[in-house]
Each structure stands twice: as C-alpha cells, then as structure tokens.
Length: 122
Image 1 (spheres, rainbow, N blue to C red):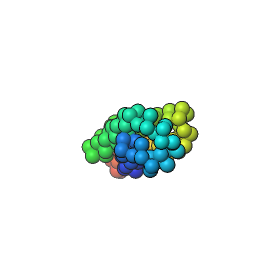
Image 2: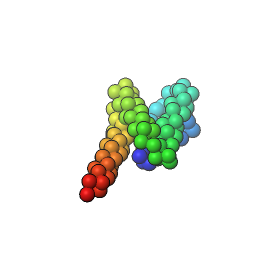
Image 3: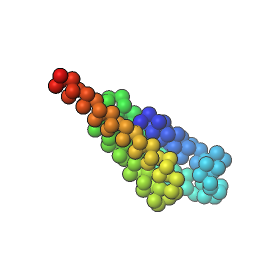
Image 4: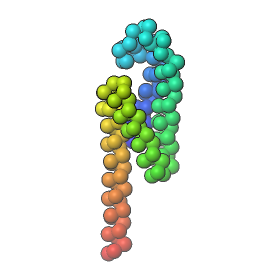
C-alpha cells in the first residue's frame, strides 16, 4: 500500500511540475506542443493523484480498514479507466499494484480473524 501511495506522489510531481519539461515529455512521449497545450489539464490530474496518495497515507496512518479499501478501490478503478481510455500500460503501472495491495490487505485481515477465532475457541 505504501508503494501505491509513493507512486501516486511521483505521478503528482511529474504531472504538476514536470509535464511541460524535457523529463515529462520523455516519460509521457509528448512533443513540446502537446505538453504545453495540456499542462493545465495535467496539473489538475496530478492534484487528483495527490488526493489518492493522501487517502492511502491516511488509511495507513489511522489503520482504518474502510479508508484503505476505499482508496485502493479508487486507484484500481482510475487505473482501469485510464488503461482503457488513455494508455493500456496504466493498468499495469497503477491498477495492478493497487489490486495486489487490496488482495494482500484482505488476505492478512482474513487470516488474522481466523487466527483470533482459533485462539478464542481453544
């Protein structure tokens, strides 16, 4: 989950501060004209990625299951949508790590609940 949050902070930085610079153009395969004309849109999108990262960090900080599940699900949905509408690799770079984190979260929770039931039954 921390990896997913860090990756979204990285995306925020790229989209908000390096979109219309050589590094952003190289990473996102854009011409100077395209990056210049879409810079404001990218900044907006970067801000949304920052909100996702903040929600994931909040969930880790407070250990609230619902917050973790909600924000991981948001990342999965956004990654799938981006992969289907913008660039297929977004599914691998954003949705897949979030899905793995969600599965791990639910698996660990399920196993810890099973272990606590076993302890109570003994």
